[in-house]
Length: 58
Image: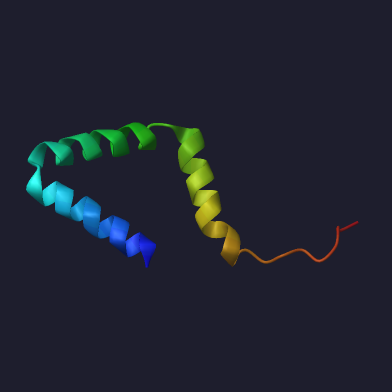
């Protein structure tokens, strides 16, 4: 629920203030330019779907 409120607030700001769109685009481009951040984000998204290991393999 909170995610949708934040998404709606961001979308409203983008529609009301066009310069915010350029700023958000610049921030997204900057974050995608950081390979460590991209790898962390992809790992955080994929983690719940990975199978859990019950014990160490020998």
